[in-house]
Image 1 (cartoon, rainbow, N blue to C red):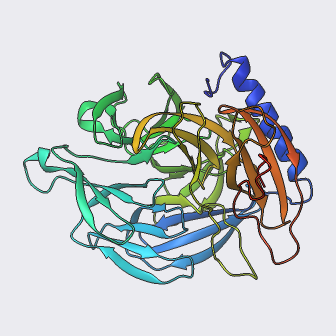
Image 2: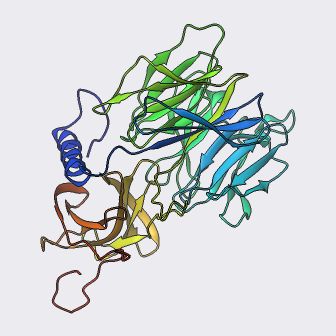
Image 3: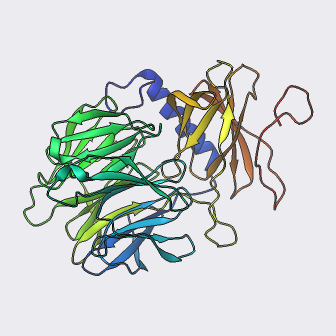
Length: 414
């Protein structure tokens, strides 16, 4: 299934995007546009600024937190923000309720990314003239650290794809390296000059900034590199980048933040300036979509969904990226990952609550729930392919859908 952008995409890809868009239109007619909360490091102000918008055009500015030299930042699935503090060689953690703590120290951080299980991966710069002593470290949610990859000279930005593979900007070889979940290394793309920071779009294409060339590259899922954007400015350079849940691309650029607007899944190549950051804009991150209850910032992220999607008699995992709402199916043989494929992207506001064969076609389907409207829905699938959707019953006020199973033994999921 080809989910890449461009005029050569397959009919199946076009149908999937059209079908999901139709499903979103039906489900979200009374909900409104998803809000975007953009966090940007103000380097010389030693602040993190929050820019909020409900239309991705007009942004209001607030001071989110005071942190020295916030060069890179990333959210985990629970809404915790991790910030690389360049001057102090540390990582700060800010919870959804605003509690700030020091998560790790003695780290000269150049890139961060979080996997689907909430583990933080950090590229640490080489600490001596021996450039090969650079490493990628893994921190579990409780703060325990281990070396994921060693002997990497000058590692830069990191990003995960929907299948759990980690990608590293590796300017020493003008390339992007790919690491499987068990650490196997391959070269994903080459000929990029000096890649710096990385981010995936909704279609699985990887974008990389190159401050030396003042450019942004787009790398297809097969590793083909094209130049997406080149700036002719001699005073402002590209730095960090992030995609929101609507597919818009935000880039810190000199003393400002610019946006490349997504129109029907295609990015406008001409950026618009949406915010000014005097003294220089550094790291950038977008708060993952959350569901709030009684104006609190308590995230409702769901649980791991299990079902046999490929009919091999072994149960598989469904994982979801809360920032992009993209789902993916991990094919398992007992506890061993043997493959994977992208599934439908969920409409904004909807959470995945279970997988079961609702329409009796021998293929598991998604059971969805919208916490804001209490509406349930069924997303009919054939393998990973979206086939259609119907609304289900709405629980009474105060109740929520949490799981699917055959409770009364009639052979049909409840």
